[in-house]
Length: 452
Image (cartoon, rainbow, N blue to C red; front, side):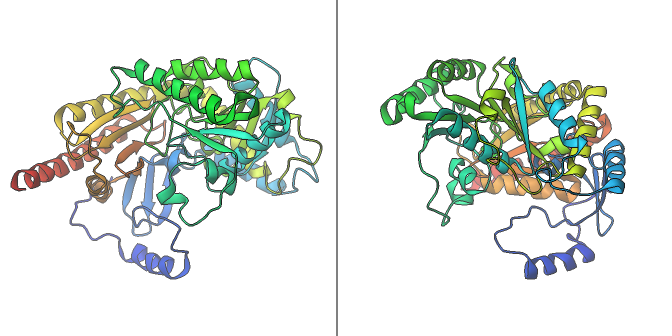
């Protein structure tokens, strides 16, 4: 891999040229990370227009669990493209849609008959999950959680909890949405994770029974492992209590597994860590191996509640994306990607925990499987978020190789979403560079604190 130093000229001339063209032609509100323009990519490696080589630790925000341009996926897409590109499944059906629906019924949790609807994006899957839940129950209220991210279309954005970055100035939002605390142990002040989960569940029940009443609640939507808020796992005890409560009151439980699904956490889906089966699952991202596809999968009696014509979309389950998804799932099954995630996750977790012991700016380590994160703070004792230090770490790291993506309300969480097939040398090299960046920023922050 090309060795980068912090003083290197970034971006190079071709990337700089496209950056200027991007600034002139692309809307300001479209955010970007590092000023990198891809020329080609394979596995965990990405090469920009100027020939600089990077390790991708971001994976298209969790979309590339099988890596860039996996040959089996490229082959499947090429073969489908030679036959036809599009018909609209609502107009002319095709085998790929049916075959993918059958495969999803096989792998998505649920010990009951299931049915499937395919979409293009995760936000569409969320939108349709709410439609199905409201139609099936005849109720309107939806319970979402603090820290949630469910997408950017209006219902999905209404469910999303990060106002400053995503919602400011875009209201009014959808009504009958209520927000409950998510069981975040870090900063909770609770004695342990179980106490934190119990307190959060008591707050959830209090919200439902004092502000809404259970008989009016159509659905509860939850990320079993929150993504955008900073990789907070929902404790198994919390998810089990939530499942029991929803069952008792006829409430639809929706699991948003858009980022946590498809082997990322060491299981096919994150709810499997707790043994909980949701009524509806929204899935997307790594399902397509890099092509846009999403799905709503769930109990057949719920999925069949909307009348004929009530669900649809021009590009939902596009033939190319179906071919890519079928190839992706086959690769994951044949090569045991859950085991790959456990292996990669163990290496990343061990390194992250060693940094937490060594550096005062690493306040917390959390995640499941290969969905791991570190929270950067001003000082570990006070937990003060340090978004500026996080920016410095990400910047210094990408100058030397790894591409990273931040998360968290304060932008102070560094998350790992690299391909699960990343080889050991690549992973170790990328972690070495990230560790060196943390070391450099920690030393500078310590020096500044001493002179303050």
